[in-house]
Image (tube, rainbow, N blue to C red):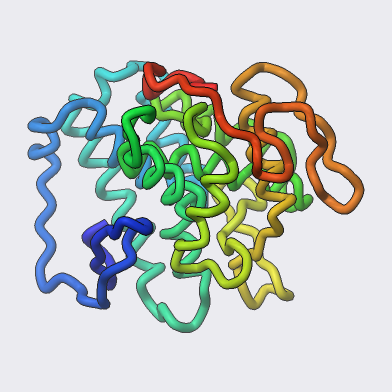
Length: 281
């Protein structure tokens, strides 16, 4: 995250609302320093590296997830693995900082999963009924919801969505919106996202490791209707519960019948004791 132009702090209304363009003069990265962090905080950083894989490179996804799938949390204490993840992430991120103003692709890639993720993260810290999520944990949830949105819009297939969940869960990261956070609260909080203009705007996947262009290829920022966002939240919760999501109504609005109703007015049940890696629904 330090390799960027923007620096910001949070505000009671939302994430990163106060800030400026101020690139660092020098960035020092020492993977051995990660040994001082808890596994949860290391995974928090892994989530941001995985974001670049899901948005830019299927090979990077496998490079990150493969060792965790095979060795579990032991990989998080392997300095060679962590150094490789850091190096690969730097190499794939830095090109997005070149010609920054020529295409919003260079904005949508680093922000993949963040529109929903920021809302979920901020809300998770808003009261004692919630279990606070770290930034990367919330972004992991946001990427799964983003994949659900892409499928609803016909931009990606079921396999792409399944691969999102499999990769994120294999890392030990959360994939589901916590039960204590209502869809109405997410919709309200997402209005404070920096890309919100009348509707939420975000990058969406076409396949594992590739974002979908829109507007004839001139943009990668998709404006999302409320009905589609609601249907994606239904799909995310349905997968968590192990049930079939109801089909969208004509026109794209989600069918009713689950806790996450299409009108964003259904309150979420409380379950603040759920572990980070659990479903939470």
